[in-house]
Image 1 (cartoon, rainbow, N blue to C red):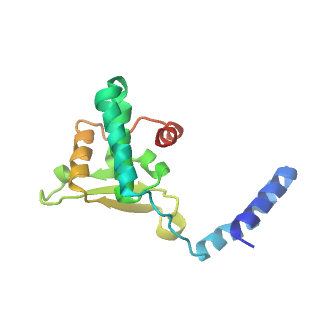
Image 2 (cartoon, one colour):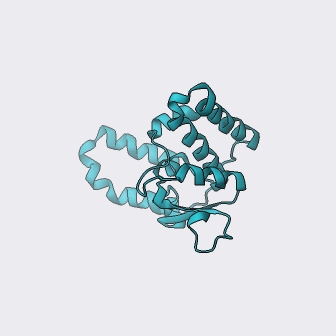
Image 3 (cartoon, rainbow, N blue to C red):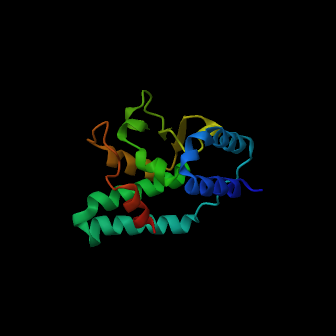
Length: 171
């Protein structure tokens, strides 16, 4: 049976018999090991034209149509673009703070022209580890990220939107 069917069956059992919850720990451990042994497939990202249209829309909203909320729209557009170029998930993007970024302006060698993003506790940590990196090499995006991070405190998130609001904006 597919993994998702087994998972749903265990969840249904837990729902009907909640007192067995603690006794199902070995069952959940076997599910986790099953996930680690199975191969996974990557989803096809959105076409670049759709991404650039969404980023342009966010910039248009932030600079022209809704400047009162530019503090939400502009970081959203930059993060959306950054997520696309770095192959990041919305949940991973949401956790990114200034501390997680290594910018060209902060590099020891000024000839480095990329942004490195540290991703802690990613969704695929079972396959690739708890700490991962993504690299963004798009020159225009690097300038936008530098602009966004100007005078940003080290612990500040790049985007102050909550994850549900961020997903709603994307929809």
